[in-house]
Amino acid sequence: MTDRGANGGPNWLRAAVLLGVPSLIALYLTWQLAEVRSGQFERLRESVERHETARAHDMDRMYAVMYAECLNQAVTDLQLSRCAVAFEGLMVKTK
Image 1 (cartoon, helix red, strand yellow):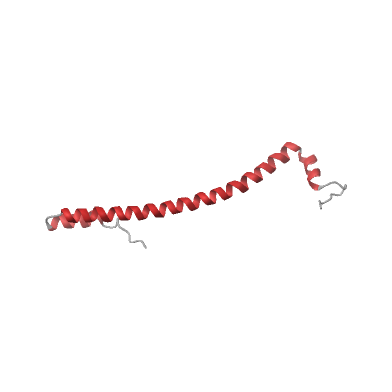
Image 2 (image 1 turned 90 degrees about the horizontal axis):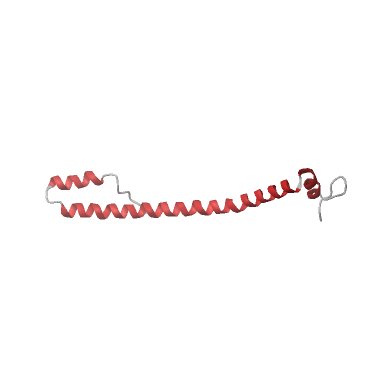
């Protein structure tokens, strides 16, 4: 059932006459584009969040390996302390 305007015609037809068919098409396409793009942006945001979490985890693992390598190669107490200073704050404990 369509809504009828004051003159008995459908409201969408009155809008088409008032705005013009090209304007009505442009409004419809803009609305469709906004609906489609909003879903795509949400999926993109979720993908970026997953990527950032995975990257942070990989960086933490890389720093842990580099720290262990530094400790393994250190011979003196000074070299051990340099390893601690070099990696201080870089390794974040993640769950």
